Length: 83
Image (tube, rainbow, N blue to C red; front, side, top):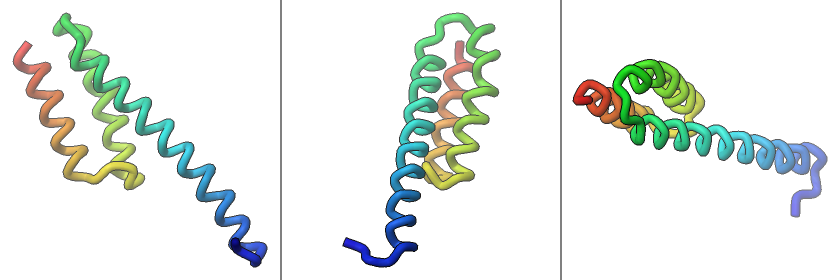
C-alpha cells in the first residue's frame, strides 16, 4: 500500500475517474443500441448527431480508441442511410 500522501490522493482520484469513464462509456453504448434499434428514419436522423457527438467525446478523452470511434460512426451512418 502507498505511504505517501500524494499516492493516496492519486488512488482516490483514479477511482473517481474510472467510475466516471465507465458511466460515460455505458451511456454511449446504450445510445448506440437505441439508434440501432430505431425503425423510423426521421427519428434515427435526429438521433444520429447526438450519438456521433457522444462517440467523439469518448475518443477525445481516450476512453475509446479513435479508430473504434471512426468505425462506430461509419457503421451508424451507413445504417441510417440505408433505412
